[in-house]
Length: 355
Image 1 (cartoon, rainbow, N blue to C red):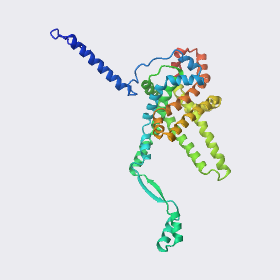
Image 2 (tube, rainbow, N blue to C red; image 1 turned 30 degrees about the vertical axis):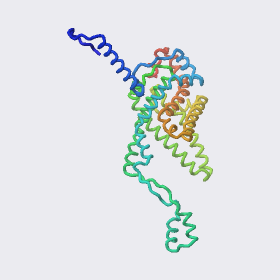
Image 3 (spheres, one colour; image 1 turned 180 degrees about the horizontal axis):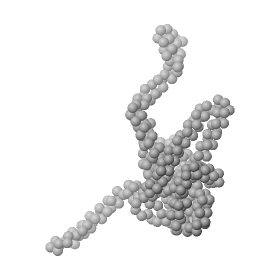
Image 4 (cartoon, one colour; image 1 turned 120 degrees about the vertical axis):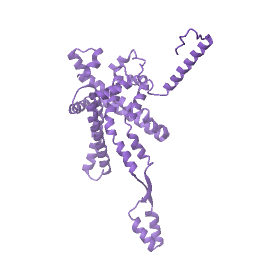
């Protein structure tokens, strides 16, 4: 707070001390507000890189994973909020699932309800009464309204936000794995702007591919046992889902690291999935463990299990995948490029954009 420049206005020591105390209280109040706001310090310089951070990036072992996770847990929480907020159209779908605008009614469960109802009305007897008690059961039915369909249309916009948001989050988590300084908000938007075209195209493709794979699994599961072909297609759908789950981790990493076409990224991702099978399986076990803990929390304490995905689970699963996948990309694509062009580690970040 500036003090008066007019020499005729003199402040006593008590008045100066009161002004300093007021300034301190105001600063403490702002600090308390920022403490509960995850985006308040998003552009402020962090604590820096730990002394052995580079060693962890060069030796991505299982033990170093938990060391890095403990150090970067606060950043993972913020990244998860960015991931959820960026894909905000999904909240429209969740609102529809809540049934707040829907019509809730009942409907007969059995097709014999209508003819049996006629028999009971015109020829009641103990036999028809017994049958009526069995076949007259009602099932709850939810009918979507016009408002629900509008919200579902808005929720479909997630196909446009998913790719860019995932690209920005992948860039931040990749730099965390590499042990590089991270400026969350700046890195997030800079990466989206730099890769917007490919992020939109592949984001739409990713959502459609995942939808088709899930649809196939559900379809063949419902028809499982009908014949041998349905059984084979069911297991093939599961294998395809597992293969693509590994591939998409590498695709997003290559999208932010190299200047490649989407076709080449798919081809390279297939190679990396095979070459990095050990690390991929470890990542799969880690992700299954995280999802299993979340599922158990839903059974034990439902409110905590519901809120956990909005706090930690998605960013942690993506972090596990990147920690497992990036070393293989570094070994096969990045390190040979450095060796061929004589690029030092100091300039490695700038060099990767031109690979």
